[in-house]
Image (cartoon, rainbow, N blue to C red; front, side, top):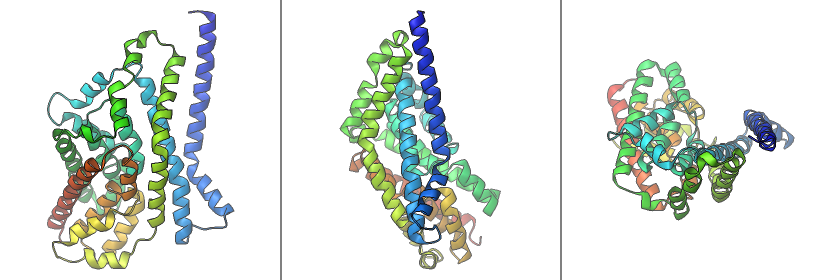
Length: 350
């Protein structure tokens, strides 16, 4: 290797290390930064407007930073690994193996629904089958370790274990259904083009590429994808912030405590417009149970909030056509309602 190439690689490594350190520093301090900005504005999280504004200030850069990091890394990875290999890895030799792997990956990624979208886009970018990517998108916000730990601490291992089993069942089954229907044509055209190209030319000559060229490929992917999606992220999170903290607990408890069959579907419909992660919605769940709501009905509400939020749908609209969003929402909603009925049957007097 030439000395000039050695120097170029050292400079690139130094820049990469600085960029990673800066990203980690910013990402780990987003919440304190939001606190500081809210304080400078003379507002407090004690009131609803202040809480909504804090939520917006914190969530927008978090989701955008995640998207940028994931898309950049996937762009670099494409120069080493062909989309066909990635697709084969998560497709599995038997039906459902890839879906189970993706859903299991979701357990260890503590993301809310909007934060899971960047990885969803990254999977599509890597050529992972559509149904498999949906298994991850459903599992990541719904069945992550934060939700399980909080459920275990608040309600015991039986509730946490049943929640885990039912959540994974929904993620795998919904992904299988979507995958078998062959809905790839309902991806937006720009996503289809990315899947078709997938830096295949770069991969074919991957062994001859320099690291500078690989980094350029990652930056190219960031420009192409983040440049198209960022506005939808801001709008989606803005909607979520607008309704964050405005949870009418007394009204919802009066519906969720009823024995009528429609209480579970009603809870799902109430939960979809809201937006929170598992840690944020569990205190509401506890409050609803304290007001007499049925456990299964409340669980259905919680799942709809963290796995089918309206802000998530707005962000996904830039990636998916309405027909595919409707199918995704419908399949997951049916699964969530099933969970509610099962929990009410297993724990009728919780």
